Structure formats: structure tokens, C-alpha cells
Length: 204
Image (cartoon, rainbow, N blue to C red; front, top):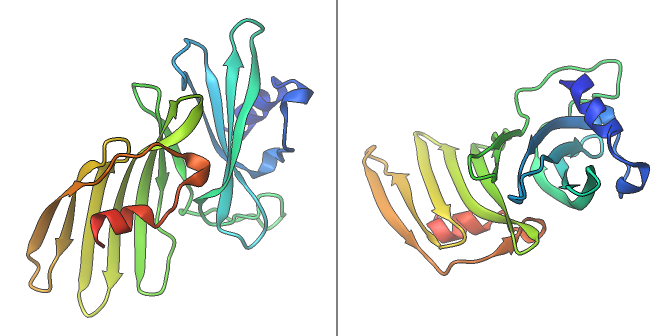
């Protein structure tokens, strides 16, 4: 995988690299037609600084006329995962890494496995779509676990663009309460996404 990613980077003209990318810190990459013009584009998740759980996401769109990848923005610190010290000799693997998947309509699914926190964890999935010349958050889903005397579980899945979706919360007796999510739809650039939004919308 990493040799393939390096090959993709080498295809980029030097002027296209708006921000330096250390290839050993590329966690994962995805190619696909994100903007619907019939050409293969590129997205990459790159680790940032040691001891920091946040990561950057770099987007490149292919110029069909001249057949090269041009920068389409860098979204800072909206993706998280466990720092792996890829550039250090004592590298160890991790199961807490983001994953990228291409959806049939060209949107990007980002799976963010939950970091271990004090008594709780949240697994989250963001759907990123190209709208109005920008990458926006089209949908979000999460599974939230609170480890108390019993495990309290809640989930939510809603379309950010339409504001419609559904949520669920377990109760102390293990019963489930299902709710309909209905809020005003929004077009939110990925770079401006507030990670607390889905919890407020879903009442968690």
C-alpha cells in the first residue's frame, strides 16, 4: 500500500504540492471520481505531529485537459486516529486508524473508530461530497458507548444536507427509544464542520 501511495505522490507536479507531505505519514489514500467529471481524483489522510490524535486530509482533483492532479484543499484536524510513529524505528501498529471508502455516487466515506476515552467511546462515519466547488459534510452517523454500571448505547444517522435521519438510545432497563431527526438542512464545508453537531442534533 505505501509503495503504491508513494507512486501516486510522484505523479504530482512539484507546484501542485501546496503543503509538504511526508510520505511515511500517509495513513491511507483513496482514488475515485469525486466531482463527477469522469477523471480519477485523490484523497489522502496524513498524520500531523507526534502525540497528537488529529490528522489532516488532502484533496486533489484531476485536470482532465492536462492530466495532472491539482490541489483542491487541505482540511486540518478534522480526522482523528492514534499516532503510530511511522517515521520512528520503533514503529508499532494500531487498530485505531481512519478508513476511506468510495461510495457509488463518488462521495467519500470516512470511518473514524473511537479513541479510548474516560468511560466512553464513539465510532463515527462521515460522508463527504463535492458540492458547489467544495467538499462538504453530506451525512454523519455514530455509535456512542458510555461504560457505567451498565453500558449505555446510543446511535444516530442523519443526512446533513436535508436534516433528516433517525436516532436511538438505550435505557437503564435495556429498552430502546427510537426518535426521528428533523432539523434544518445545511451545506457545511468539511473544513468548518463542528464535531459536536451530531450529538446536539440527535439529543445525545
